[in-house]
Length: 112
Image (tube, rainbow, N blue to C red; front, side, top):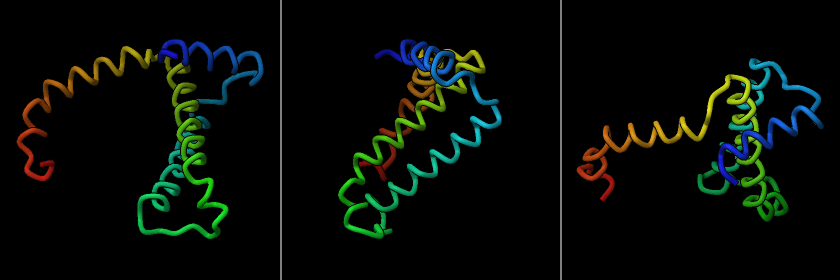
C-alpha cells in the first residue's frame, strides 16, 4: 500500500465507520498516547525495563507492531485533517536529509 493509498483508506474508514474525525487537538493527544505505548514496549523489549508477566513478554513483538500501526493511523488522520500529502512530505524530507547529512553520518566516528 502506498502512503497516498493509506491516506485515502483511512479517510474512507473515518467517513464511513468512524463517523467523523476527532478534532485535531484530540487526535494530537491520542497520537502522543500511542507514541507513549510504543516507547513503553521499546523500553521493555530493547531497554532495561522488564515485563510484569511472561504473557506480556510473549506477545511483546506483535503488540509493538500493533502500537506502531496505531501511531501511523492517527498520524494519517492528522495529515488528512491538515491536508498534508505524507508521501510528498516524506520525499521532501528525504531530499533535505540527503543533502544536509550527506557527509555528516559518513564522517561520524560513533557510527563506524
